[in-house]
Structures are given as structure tokens and as C-alpha cells.
Amino acid sequence: MNNKTKKLTTAAMLCAISFVVVAVGRIPVVLFLKYDPKDIVITLGGLIWGPAMSAIVSLIVSLIEMVTISDTGIIGAIMNFISTCSFACVAAFIYKKKRTLSGAVMGLVVGSITMIVVMLLWNYLITPLYMGYPREAVADLLLPAFLPFNALKAGLNAGFTFLLYKPVVKALRKAGLVEEQADAAKSGGKISWGLVFVAVGVIITCVLFILSMQGII
Image 1 (tube, rainbow, N blue to C red):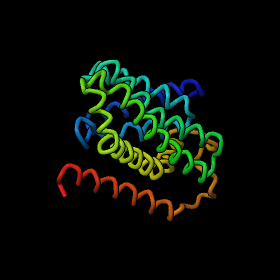
Image 2: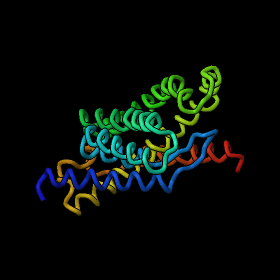
Image 3: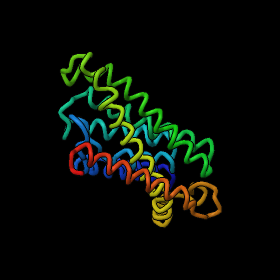
């Protein structure tokens, strides 16, 4: 299988998986805001094959979602695309420049911060257009609703991406879709258990916070 065919196969696979997790994995968090794990899949693709892969898959999945399961039309698709790219593409771009463990962590952290800031701005500007909320009402929701939602989303995305990266790369290498040099950070094959515990702690904290916002705990 040549390199071009591998990339096409990979892009199709990432699109299919991303759409499936959107269709079956959406979790209500607060108001009309729902979390889905597609950004994890798209970010993994970007870390392995570069930020362009994240952008392409995000665009295709946003368009498919728009014409199938979404009720927010083109504006919702644009919001989905911007949200995913502000996290996945930023993380992948930084990791592409610095393919080390610290580069991966830096990419995920900066991607998280970028997504939170970008989506607060875009929620303020765009949400009134497709949700019918007055802009003043949206402004009042930025800190109590949109900020915690995007922080939780970023935390879950970053935590799961960090934990899944190496196992996914190993599986893809066995399938012949990833070359040896495209492997994860240059850490000598050692697992950074401290960072693993941090990632698990972030995920658990986010899950508990979501459950508390839903009144389950």
C-alpha cells in the first residue's frame, strides 16, 4: 500500500469512527450543550499524521453531521469545525514541531486553552444566531455555562488523547498504516506514570463534575 493510499484509508477510517462516536456518544452536560468524544479521534489522527489530517477529518465529519443528525444547520457545522480545529490542529501543530513527550503535553495544554478561549468568543458571537437567544442572555451564560462546558470538554479530550496515543500508534503500526518513525514522543519507550496519573485524575474530575451538574451526585 503506497503512502497516498494509506492516507486516504486513514482519513476515511478516522471520519467513520468520528461520526459513529458523535452519533452514539453524545452526553448532555448543561443547557443544550452536549459532549461527544470525536475530538479525541481527530486529535489522535493529527498527532500521528499532522494537523492537516485533523482539519480535513473535522471538516468532513462536521458536514456529514450537519446533513444527518444535527439540527443546527451550517452554523452548527461551522461551530463544530472551529471547536475541533482549535483543539486538535493546535495540539498537532505543536507536536509536529516538537515530537517529544513534553511537546505532546504542551500541545494538548495549549490546544485546550485555545479551544476554551476561541469557543467563548464564538459562543458570544454566533450562539444568538442559531439558538435564538438574546446576546445579553448569552453573555450572562459565558461564565456559568459555556466556560465550564468547554473546560470539561478540553480536559476529557486531552486526558483521553494522552492515554490512548501510544496504544493506538502500536495498533496502527501492526496494521501497516504507521511507519516506525511516526511513533510517539521520544521517551525511550518508557511510560511517564506521573503524567498517566494526572491524565486519569483529570478525566475522573471532569466526569464527576458532569455528574454533579446533572444532579446525579
